[in-house]
Image (cartoon, rainbow, N blue to C red; front, top):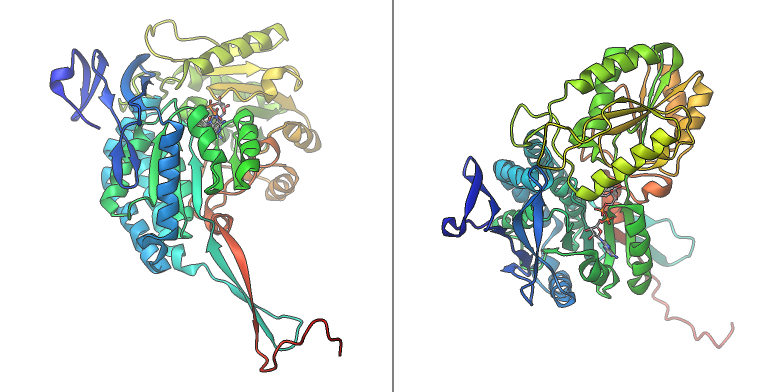
Length: 516
Ligand code: TXE
């Protein structure tokens, strides 16, 4: 990020050397292509908005189709001809280890930029920026453990084996809600396996990802191995996902855009993985530790202001404990402190886009018309004039069929439903188009095993929620997408198998047209 004091007309805040300007002068960011910092070829930019104040704070380059071509061609050249194509897997691991070490040092600055750009709490972005070092260290260790196999082949005089090879250029499309975390999840395994990458930032928040290019530069990756571009779906995302030199697409975003991405991949036959969010059930049985479940549910839906793909946005309470549970929950929700995400005392920041607030308002109004009761929240806070804040909201839904129950709102809105039996709640929890995550609170371990088996979700948490690790695969069922990120599985998804046959006989091959 560059800062020029002379350009500033109105400075509104200064947090430890990170100045934020409200009007007149904006921070500028550049794209990172082929090891160089570049603007868009025609100089076009778009403004990034600080959702805490609802005003522009940064200028982001708008990549043209040509800019995208340059990035993909640089990645292709690095994959085919450059230093990266010649180094050993162990050396690739060393680059990743260095990247992880540098990230741990730079977490404060990267975290602040992400917080300003998205409204996510600095407490969380700072921690995430530090924790993602673990992802790079994990994949650094795996880089030289990608093994092939010898095949017990059924032909005499033949020796056959498999090797796992990288795919080539990976297009990694990252949304705004967890920029740095999702960068690590995607490029860690992609680079460990020997691919090169073009990262596309979201038009809603790109700054932290572009800043991340400085860490790539300092880690010394050869030019073209990691390229970072910014821009809208069209032309930037479209050109990238249809590009003939792209062989793998890793997409995180919404299902509607994912359908475009799948269609785009028909142009280049790129392999695709999709992580598309959800409407995750959070189930509490009467034998659960209620205090722990209330805290888990609050964290599951109001953490990151509900802008999390795994938000536990459908709460299922066994009837006998429902009223007491909701009393405790609404009391806690009423005390959540909304405010500036950079301050330590703030517990919930704003939403990242105005569009989300509009969607939430419209769905809450629909739900009320369909008979739902608002137990807490439901509005923009009356005492906050600027910024895109929304109250933590708890909606008591009389019926699973209410539209709000199966609509991802990506905000701090919880739908509550009651159940009588285990069979009933399994049916209700699975009655959704999504299938990313689920939470179950019970002290009965046999039941927890029965339920985890029955739930149609890619991740099930028992007596905990929202825990992630580089070691644990992450991904969904149904409309929540396909493919898995993290863990050894991700390495498999960024490689393909080559089969090699060797004839070990000294006899020449016979003429196929002379039958013996
Ligand atoms: O996502 P989009 P948006 C959900 C959430 C949210 C909704 C829309 O419900 O409210 O999706 O969010 C790029 N070819 N999630 O608008 O549109 C686009 O530029 C290639 C859940 O942010 O899916 C951006 O970089 N790329 C989710 C990226 O796709 C294209 C996180 C995501 O944009 C493109 C975010 C095209 N034709 C939203 N068009 C999660 N899984 O956590 C757009 N893009």
